[in-house]
Image 1 (cartoon, rainbow, N blue to C red):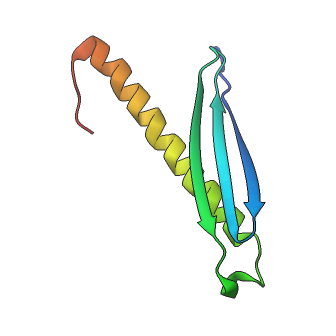
Image 2: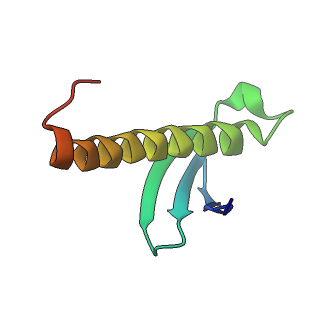
Length: 85
């Protein structure tokens, strides 16, 4: 059995109170999908500064997952006709 490996890299940037994240999925066949997420720092988060990173990364991964579902749905539709998720 052949094992496949897909890689997701998350890049996080901060500018002032804004945190942005990009989640990039790379597959062996050179497919690249990108998800984006954003968070804005709440002054109450000061004792736990990684909250913005966590939220932005989670939102980027959610966006990436939705994009991957769209691609899969489009691929299925090529062979079976439209699907409804």
